[in-house]
Each structure stands twice: as C-alpha cells, then as structure tokens.
Length: 215
Image (cartoon, rainbow, N blue to C red; front, side, top):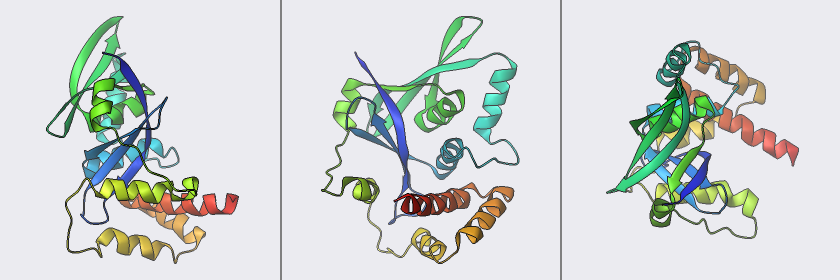
C-alpha cells in the first residue's frame, strides 16, 4: 500500500461542545484534509510544539519523552497512521537506536506530538485518506474564508449542543477588545501559569491581528 505524506494544517475547537478539538492534517501533494478528534491535553501539547514562541517553564509529557529519548540516543524517524476502525485512528512510531529500528504502537495524537518534537515526517496510507479525507469547498474568497469553513467542517465531527454560547466563544469575543500589548502581557502570564489552552487562544488572536496588519 502506498504512503501519503501529511503536514499539520492546524487545530480547531468546536464552538458547540466544550473540550472537543480536531487536528487537521493536509496531504502534501493534494487538497484532501484528514480531521482527527483529539483531547484537550494533546491539543495543547501539539499547539505548544507548533508555536515556537511559547516556552513552557517546565517540560510537558511529550517534551519529557523527547528529553529522555535524546539522553539515550533514541530517534523518532517517522509516524505512520496505519489503521482506521470505527472512527478511531491507530498509529505507529518508527524509532531507531544504534541503527536498530523499532516500531511502537501509539495513539495518533501522541505520535504526532512527538513527530513535531523530532521533526519527523507524518504519513498515512492512501486507503485511509480515501476513506476519511475531506475536501473543503471554498468560495471565491478562498484565503480569507478557509479558516472559517474549516471550523464548520470540524464542528460537524461533534454532536450538536443546545448551548451555543460556549465558554470558548465568550473568551474569544473578550480577547478582541484587548490591545496587542495587553494580549502579549496575558500570553506571558498564561505560559507562566502553565495554562497552555489560554496561551494558544491568545497566540491565535495575536496572529490574526498580525495577518490583518500585513494585508
């Protein structure tokens, strides 16, 4: 079976259900995206690895694994999402030590969190992408509306909730009223308090404003 290389498009959270996140993977040589439901802790760990500017005062679990592996000369060579059963993705971590290769079973969220820290490529089989991959239908304003449409697709992965005025939406609306200096101050405080979910939201708001300024 042929392997398809993936990269990380981003992480989205559901506006209709607290604590529900989805990791969006994108095929490198194509337009299909692979959404994978993950937990809040794993979402934070992946977000921290993606955001190079956020430095936790203490190592997270995946950082500890990386430090442990470095100490004993273990290298993660690649991650393969090899199976999909009843909506659950199964992955393998391909490791190497002293030129001996080992394959370790892992949850997909953990495997990707480690792949980021080792700069290791992520793959899946074409059959899995054919089964679970999605195309995002973009309008003429593709670049501006891509993020919004992606969130809509992600929300469809989760069951509806009558309470649409979630904690996340209230917090995000509050951030919009803050100055960029206040956002950076809050970001420093969130990292110091090890509140990485809040730190990720602050970074998202800062990035949005930076993108608008560039335009």
